[in-house]
Length: 205
Image (cartoon, rainbow, N blue to C red; front, top):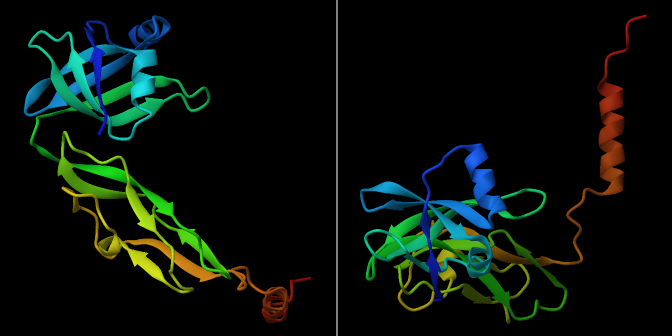
């Protein structure tokens, strides 16, 4: 997994106004918490943090703290819904060797069987892994899957060192018949509309 070193600065001002000033300075407000410690309010360099967060579950080595560096995982990333810039980040303290539960992207590879169509119902899956050895994704090869095949969470081939944390029966993907429409037939729709009209009571005059 990726490990990125990033320098932090303590934050002593709080509230929306202080957060805006932090962002105008090119930094992102953040909170570092976990292991029963008091939350630490810090700011991080915006550009470096944005690049780091392009990697799912990136491990951050937070430097510049009073007690030395700390390892942390991003747990909640808030972005501006329109412009997309980082507004705030929650970071969870972790230790080497510690097990954590994270969501990994499910990366579908391979071609769908002729006449079939892939329906992916889950794009990520919860797993337990060592904090410093979190895989970037779970690969799912759909080559050879026939129409009407399903892949459940328990069928996934997880990377070494990880264990499933999600419900084993969670549906991940299925292969459906591409020639069968999921939309109701036009005749059925018209028939249902006609029955509704026939069954309706006459309006009062």
